[in-house]
Image: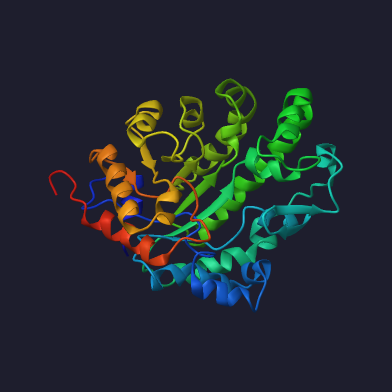
Length: 338
């Protein structure tokens, strides 16, 4: 197996920097768009063979060092008794709509090895190849709950932030439920063959560090500690500040808004880090993308524990040939002493 990513997560010496991309399995690939003309997103996710096929598709276009599972963060909702609809440009929407987060009583405890076995079967199919590690994933409690807030979902998550501050007891029940169940789902993915788990807290950047530390960190920490106790390698993706790193994770994944070297200073150079090319560089063409890639690698400065990725997921209009050029640039980069 190509185990560069797993060795990097453990901060072991590697011959080159591993590279993969968030959202590499999906919307930017012509073959995936062809599949979607015939079948819906959720239909593909719920069919293990189809989900495994889409997960492998990037290898037809660029030689990444890991396969990220084709799934959606909202997949556990249905297992918990929440029907969802994936709306283009909006994301998962609960059906019927939640009148408010008071609907926490609608949540139904579930065993992921039973209710979400279609996800685990897709991982088993992928892991049986043994070619590259499979990255499974879950949402962190805050980001997952952002899809359940009352009213239109705005980019600042005002309703959810207000609920957390106004009703801390209710928030504790809601976030506690998800911390427990998401941890078990992540452990089940690892048992099925996922080499590592990425915990997405994509929306926590709307919070100031103080609110994050007081209201959100405890639940992310609970989730990540459970995974650490079970020996599950993790990437914790979200924000580049000290409070975020305190929640845990073998590696911290950061977006493009903070230079990688500065982000590393904030979270501590004794941790692995993932990132963080601006996805817009891919849209700007090969020359710009290659130059941006070199900038990120220079900022990493050959430190042990760097996983190359974008600072967010691939944009739907990303050109696979430009993505391949970025992979080529990473593979060409010489690490000190290698």
